[in-house]
Length: 318
Image 1 (spheres, one colour):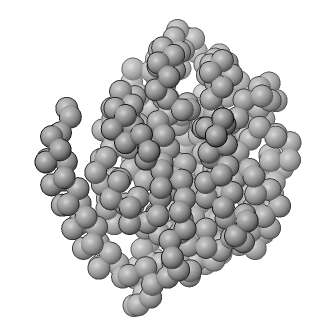
Image 2 (tube, rainbow, N blue to C red):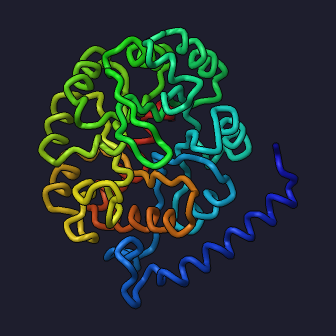
């Protein structure tokens, strides 16, 4: 249901008040007493915010997301469904905020409506995606969680990336000239490679880079020119699932080996928050971690990773 302008304004003001309270509790972005590990502001956060385009947002609360973007320098964001949204609400949010939200359409198997089709590798579900894309409202496809380890409220998915549905998804991406964001764990890296080889003309964004270690990230980028390595959740000071998912050496500074790879291939990396508006404090940490990461990059690399690479994928004519 669409809110009245007055209701939306009141909601946004309330969220800004909440955000101020969270920031007061966790400490300012500049300096101060040390907060708990999950909310520590990494070095460099005192600098002026780096404008960036968030490559990974599960949009559940529009007003909260806009308030966080305003506070932490995110000029735009790729948005797709979360627990309280769907393709239609994502398209509507982007229509209300065309200069802020870049909508992606999904038929990912975490949704009950689509999971049976994935179980049977029934390509009929691709007709639903085709219809969504034919409207011209979406700028990409994703997040498609073909292989995703279980997490609270998220059943495990383990579908072959070379199966009929994933191939159909990339066929539609080719048809409409759109990028595809896939979540594929390291356990399916071989099949992901085969898929990338089969569709060399389709831009594939690898959500979280599959949480691969740096040597596998380098190998995949060298082998697949159409692969783009997305770093959402990799910049958090601590990841709840595994401590080695972060690319940070000590919860603050990026490992030199990662910096070396990003600087060697600056056109292949994207940055995101993986925000979902479940918790204002948690999402504030995610945004602050992106700022800290970007401030550790050389200026030329920073500009590419922060925005130019993503714009090239979603708005190639610009």
